[in-house]
Length: 194
Image 1 (cartoon, rainbow, N blue to C red):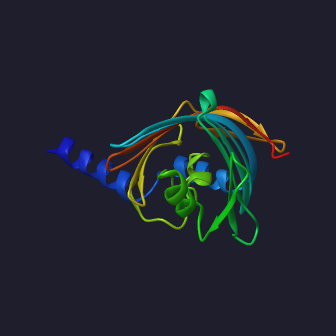
Image 2: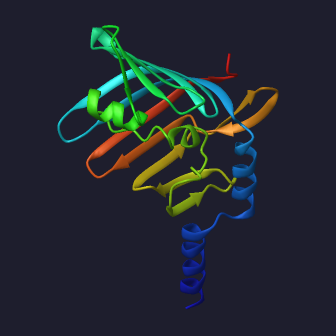
């Protein structure tokens, strides 16, 4: 009976709040407002699959994201300026705009990626504007599983990275899933924003 009670407490704490070590780690990540990553991404839905290399320069709240698919399958860049304006430039040189990055990717490229939340998830951080239904942390206090905004996010391969003179423990592998959509991001390099 006692084991069932302890399990219930652990389960409830995983659903409602982070332990002190997790809270400390999340607080440290809030300080990281500018970074650059190089990564590979693979995405798959019930009707198509997609792979690419990406370069993402982020300085809250603006960013530049360059995506290159292999073997000439296409490339695009996405920009968000400090005022929230979003534009997508295609490989053909066309520039498109929309209310949100998610809308542009969905309408123009049939991609479903939560770009407003990804800058937080890339760091292993909870996105502040989305509801959380589940959160779990590792023994070190790092976010390992998050269900937020209808997405399930799994974080792994945490390593220390020094950015702007401070060291942060950041995930280097992130799995995202929602309904029939799945994406995997493998970060090969994290550095200071240029």
